[in-house]
Length: 185
Image 1 (spheres, rainbow, N blue to C red):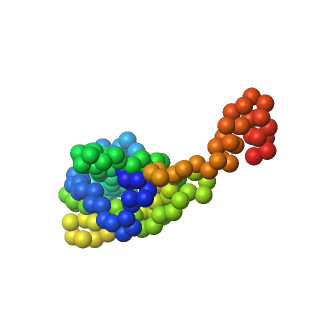
Image 2: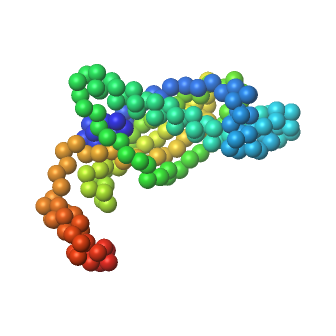
Image 3: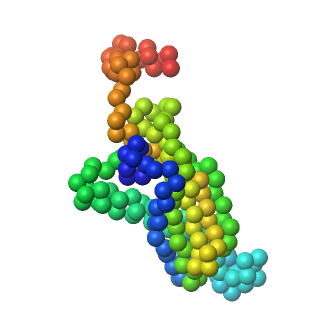
């Protein structure tokens, strides 16, 4: 999130936008990244268990990720326009689960949304918090096509490094003490 950790509201819904998948795009993505016949050849895909051409799950994920990043940038701009300083979002330490429920077919319009379901301060990285997010994607029929439980970092605005940690950090930079501390860790 491009908000400070302290400003994140649990269960707030962030609509990420929609995307319509077309056959040419499905084939283009599959040719580059997931060249399985049911993503590449509409005629051959008719005989698959999908019964026709379908988008790669990774294509569905990539579109959702792009929409999420675009939404984060828009939120940053919105906050700056209001005279507020946006927070700092960090990398993701991982995805806890990912499910592909219904195939995405040519002509499907998929709408994505993100919800922060929980948060806590990081145990290992001082000054950062962890956000636990649910990302869902529904097609135009309201069917769930994709869902994922994602984790991301968000910087704490009001973090004050404890004196003990400041001292250890300073000592670790000294030529003699630094290597000794690293061997101990």
